[in-house]
Image 1 (tube, rainbow, N blue to C red):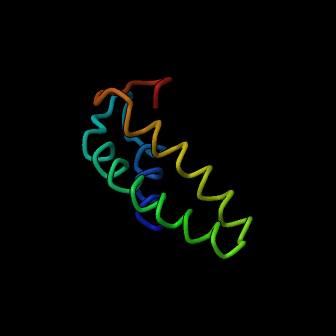
Image 2: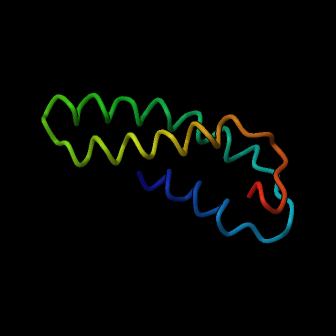
Length: 76
């Protein structure tokens, strides 16, 4: 989860009006697989809160992974 927070923080704290998120997109794609494994484990152990958190995280990672490499102002 720490890696996910880093990806989100880098985008949230973009230094300018335009940012190349190629590296963050690649990380998000890799983290999606990890997130799915964690969700399977959490749902198998009846940890509903963790499962919901992982569902929310998956939505953000998916969105980042499928954005264009170049983002500007409002897109960031």
